[in-house]
Length: 514
Image (cartoon, rainbow, N blue to C red; front, side, top):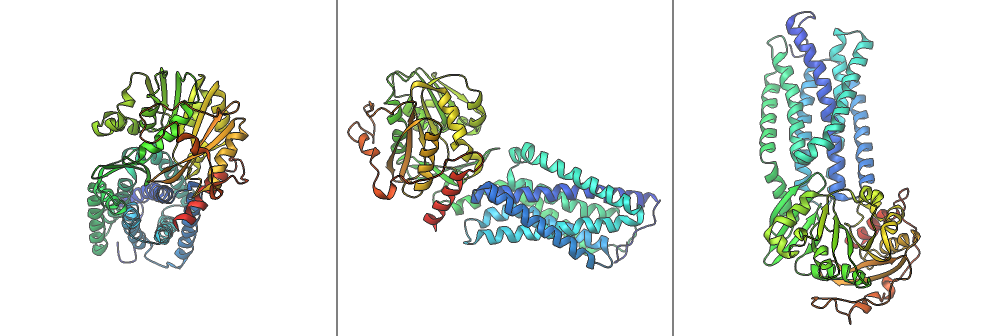
């Protein structure tokens, strides 16, 4: 091959190998391109919340940049194959390091979205150059209609492969950072294959050296991916990270400073061991204390076992079903001696059964009736969690709540996000349940809100078990008083087709956090 990218005539063995390599590269580059797009969308949702907005804007920006890359390709007059190889090397470097780079940048820069979309546009532009260049390289070897149909077939099949591999294999087993490096290696592998299969000996030695260097950088990144994740987390958290793992569902991080143990899920604080008792006593005891004999109790969420600890304080409790999506979470808090001590062994109590399943799917086919239901889901930061706060979900909850039963739902901060808080209460009422909202002060979170629900009027008083560190029979009635800055306001019902809660939550917390 000379500097212009000319290759040996068709029909020779070297030319056939070269053509096969080009066709295989169409499949590889399509797979890699979609994986980078999925990585950017997933990472944006993970770090910024609101998955629909993030995926929509990332995909739109990526496709726009691809269009620009395709348009610019018309100005390439010669040396298409050489440029294709250089583009593959650049995509490998930028795309392969994209997830790791964004994780490392997130805690240290103020304008993260600028970096995110700059990277999305850069990768999209380079990917947009690939297919037109490849078609032009292949055109001398096929009729025009065959070039288009063949390349697009490989392109679409590669996209299908990426869309299946990403959620089913790559995210569960490799995580985002290693996935980026793996597909960067595939891109640079295409460049290396073409560079060493090409006929002719007037080789692009500079490109070979660059491709080998990029391959080594990507391989090194793949090997130290977990360490890179840890560095990003050390910068993001104020406390030393003592445990971190990526599961198919979330990033679990535990930090510890002195006696303060903290759990973060996807970067959001779930509890601090210094004051979690305030939250969990306030969550559980007002509901169970209003049921005469809470024999059968359902906990949805609460994979840390702390709500279960409070439930099991009641002597009447005979059976507890805990439904939490992530088995890694429930295993961790059942098996770790430190964490099991925090929840007092609740997850291994003989009365408790753990079900690791999506709560929305589980509740739709649940057939039992529960005397008390404790709903302890994460805040509605995106639409996948927001569906668990919809009228549809609460109608299913009403169906499995015993006639005399009481349910409680954690409902975010009525001080920081009053519209979001009252949207939860309004939505539960729209599902046909009587409601009684209340709030408690938790130092790690500030004022936090909850909503009691029952088929008829929620009982006015509760039997609070003795021995609590925060909640007593004397304090409990005060939780139901709302000052004017947290008082009721008119809000819409949260439904699957509008997800009003997610938008209200995002808007109010954005104002609070600046």
